[in-house]
Image (tube, rainbow, N blue to C red; front, side):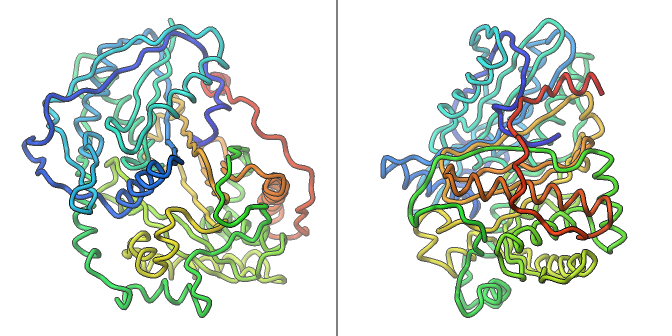
Length: 491
């Protein structure tokens, strides 16, 4: 399961049907207390959408997932599986609104939810189909309007592709494998005449309530903000800068480039992970060390400073819950010239340990208290150094990914910097980046991605940084369509 632009998905054409979610009445469901409050992440996301809408410059984005169902599709069974999935996760049946200055999320009664099929039409080519889905998601996903997701399927005689696209306010990247696992498991059980047995999935709204109870009342002098203050240093910069020339002007947002490529194939990724373990770390640490060295060679400092999203699900409690369980934390470590791979890895390990010791403080709350001017602006103030890594092989349902062939896709209308996501799956190590569409950014990001690919392959081959990083290397072509189902069949 990997993440790449939807436009790269060579999805077989077919007949498209969608399911429209409806409700009988708002609130009042047993176990669904009225007046629930949004989490810090949700509150900030909703507020940005409100402000941008008021300025007639709406901010738009979505997260989508697709997966395959073999054989003729049982449409009533799929509809029931989708409805059961929505009823199971309270955050998906919430309408968000501004009440008395706070963002409230009012849950609908699960028993009152309905799902109505709506035929869309036939698509003759993959290109027409993907163009339709891309436009559909952009037009239909609206932070300020319920429902906050779209559900449908591309139906063919021998297989179907199921798709769901969500606003970020109700989910995160780690929710996508949960979507696949639950819908596929419920569908297969219904087709066999039974019911799916799924593990407990506590409500994200309960998580949000706990978080607000613990951190809403803190102020800028709270000792729990000490790690953030230390990271900001004398300069007082809350956001670590990305040391690449993207050619952006302060205060301006730009259209985006969304691209993806494979850094290591399956065999190379295994060797890379073994090398990282021999150096006392893990694969994501080796990737972060490689990123740091490449940015340093691009003109960045010897000390890496960046933001890193970390899952707050824990090992058990929220492992099967859909929601925005992400905290973003600062990480800092030494990647100075002359340090070998093992030394940089030791620094990454120490920096990561220090970061995780301060996992509890919510990023949005720290941002609001320590950088109030930037917080009021609605977006990050300049290109920010950001690193995200997910090992998809450890997600719920990963043992069935060869059968279900799931993919994830992210999109944003505009940006003022760059974000890169790294995924490990059974096929290797992959990278998906969204960055501003400027000539400087295309050059800088192209050189960085190629340098990183060469660096991680060098680590896999030799066990370290043996060769100078070439940031001027020709850019590896990206953007060719990916035939997910076909690749699985050939494999």
